Length: 264
Ligand code: IPE
Ligand code: IPE
Ligand code: MG
Image (cartoon, rainbow, N blue to C red):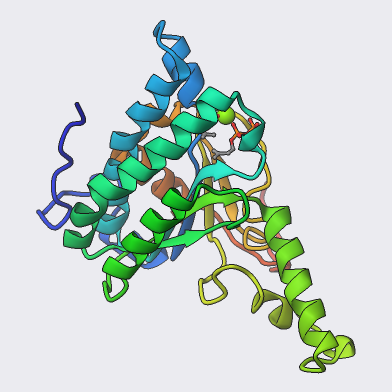
């Protein structure tokens, strides 16, 4: 039922981003793919139909990210809090994640995408973990976009797991607690080699973080778009990128910009 997304290696034009702006393309984009249930319900369909419609949105957005030259795209697919949903929806989401990974893996491999998983093992279905590991192994040598699937992911859970790792290393005498810095803690995150998030996007109009990448978004630019996730795609991504190029990132620094009021 899903439409085929054109291969991003075919020359897709980037109408929204000028050549000069390519320099300020974010290295790492994180997306909270939200609004599937409402999208479906508004059409008289069950919530699960919204999740299914999200597959094309994801493939199209990945194609758009590749074309724009983004290095890392992280996508929030299932949070540590999503277990609170009905057993039927949780079951659907697990089976669906497994199916999408299996059916899209070869295509992603052909696009030179490296698939990685970030999340907690505990409670996640074993068959989903196997599929994530299979996709990661198959694509491990790919050099294009890194696609991080945040599945059974929670920002607080990740920090708790990092704290546990640090404490265990301290007990073994491998680190001195007095010397723990931001850099030390960052080594204990799920994927410590990834750059911090430059741009965070959330679809569906909600303006909250919902426990996503709490450490990594410290200085991310945030864009909240009204479209539900199934209506998002490469063109929407490029519009957000255009917005991002006009942001001034300060990282806590300051620039003296005294206005010249003469003659006013
Ligand atoms: C996002 O859409 C997908 C997941 C959280 C798995 P939702 O399922 O949250 O859809 P809404 O926000 O209820 O519309
Ligand atoms: C965040 O969306 C999680 C994912 C997109 C996977 P939710 O729909 O679970 O977040 P809340 O409950 O609206 O904050
Ligand atoms: Mg939601």
